[in-house]
Amino acid sequence: MRIKVVGALVAAVLLLAGCNQDLAGLPKPPPQEPTATSVAYFCSMGLLEHGGPKAQAFRVGKSEPLWFSSVRDAVAFSILPGEPKDVVAIYVNDMAKAKNWDRPEAGAWVEAHDAWYAIESDYNAGMGGKEVVPFSDEKAAQSFTATHGGKVVRFDDIPENYVLESDLSSDHVADFSVAYLMQRKTAVIQ
Image (cartoon, rainbow, N blue to C red; front, side, top):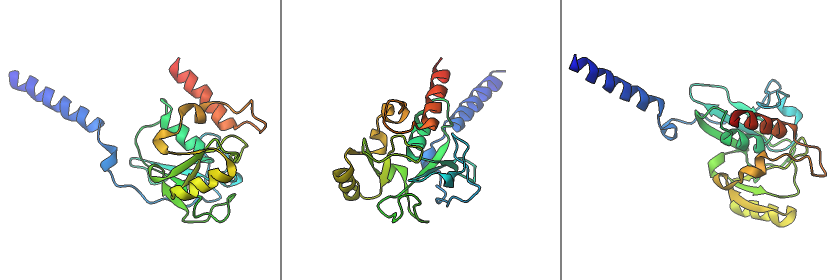
C-alpha cells in the first residue's frame, strides 16, 4: 500500500513538472511571411490590410503562427492573463531593415526579445493607435526617436499601460483591437 502511495506521489510530481516545462529551452521555429490568407489574432481582419510593422507568435506544437496586425497587439498578447502562455517565439518586423514602412519586406524579422523598441513616438499603428516600433539595432531605434520623439526600451521594459490603455483620447482613430483587449483583460480580472 505504501509503495502505491509513494508511486502515485512521484507520478504526480513528474506530471506537474512536465506541465511547468521550461519553454526557453524549446527550439524556435523560424519566422514566416504573411500571405493573403493570414488573419490578425485579435481583430480577425486580413493581416495585409494593415500597414506598418507586424508580429507573429508561435505556440508549442503549432506550425502556424498567431499573427498580429501591430507589434503593440503582440506585446499586449504576451502580458494579458487570459492569453496562452505556451509561446516559444515572438517575431516582430525589423524596421531597421525595412525599406517600406507600410509593407516591410520578406525577411525583415527579429526575435522580439532581441529587439529595441521606440515607444511614445508620433508613429501610429495601422489602425491609428499608438505603436511599439521594433528595431534590431539600438542606434536605428535612437535615430528614429530623434526624429519622431519617444524613447527606446527593451521588450520587457515596455510599460503595460502603454499597450493596454485605449487611444480614444488621441487625435487619431482608436486602435479597436487594443480597446477589445482592455475589455478582455477586465473580464478576466473580474
